[in-house]
Length: 139
Image (cartoon, rainbow, N blue to C red; front, side, top):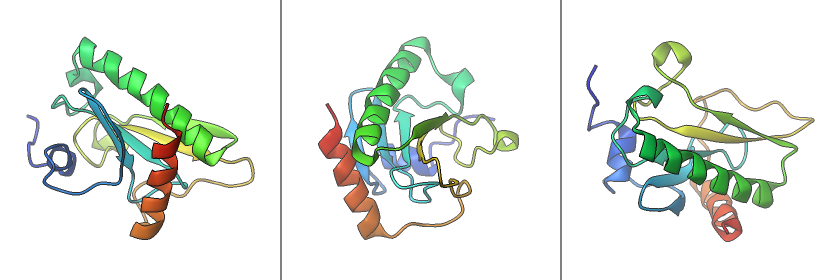
């Protein structure tokens, strides 16, 4: 299946739809998941039009993992979780719901179970507060 330029993440990357952005560089965009599994759940996307990991070129892959590490560090500093789960899903059978490659950064806590993937919208004011915390922690 060819890449769909009208997927929601492609529209966010083009600035056609809003997002709770926490970080951007020439190669990637990071923003909060609006249906978070936990507070601070962040998505990092390459700007390359890639449906999944296998469509991504090596240079974009390098920038993606470097950006994920940087943003995950800010999420860690902002929310002080006991751990961080990184997820990347390839294809509907794996649970991918938007067909643009993206990495999930999910803060995890010892006494709490993360919410289900893509199930419940968070309130905009809470998302903006969380985005501000992460932006303030970016080094």
